[in-house]
Length: 217
Image (cartoon, rainbow, N blue to C red; front, side, top):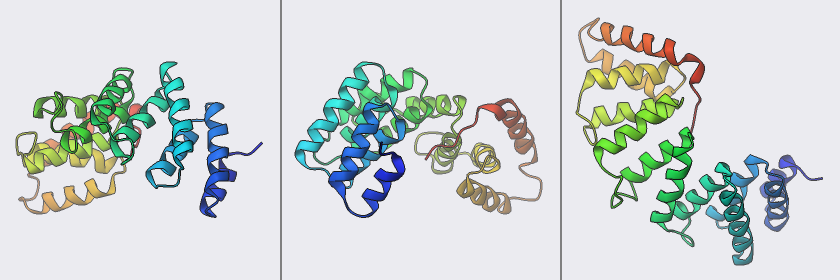
């Protein structure tokens, strides 16, 4: 039986029909990466209309069975696919995934509300920051980075270099390279030791969260 490696190799070679058949077979076996791969093929414009219909039928069927991976990828298609775009549906599906404790869905919701979904009910600054804080509580390192960016820009949170540094320091220590660089730059703009107390608080927070942190793109 073909596996993910076979599907990825077919995709690399441009054998899109073969890659689709492999990934769909793996989706029916509930192999999570396959849901992502077949949806990515749609976003890259590699599916025929018939293949798209087949994929959506499978994703809907799995989403109705509370398969969060299928629901999440279906939401991404409603958000990102030019042939399927429906921001309201994307919002609804992402909210279902978020309520079930999927940190990645919280991140996606925040990005949706800050981007294409600014018209949605949840796209308030207070809710965006709540969604990001919930994502961090569920273990998302990217959430710390996005919270920091809001405090740097003042877009959806009070502009505050100290709060920004707190979250940059946390994200950087946990492996987010861009956050680490920004923390160093911000630290260099202040007198030596200006952020020391924030750094100590951030270390305490990291100790509490140590076993829960997961990286998300």
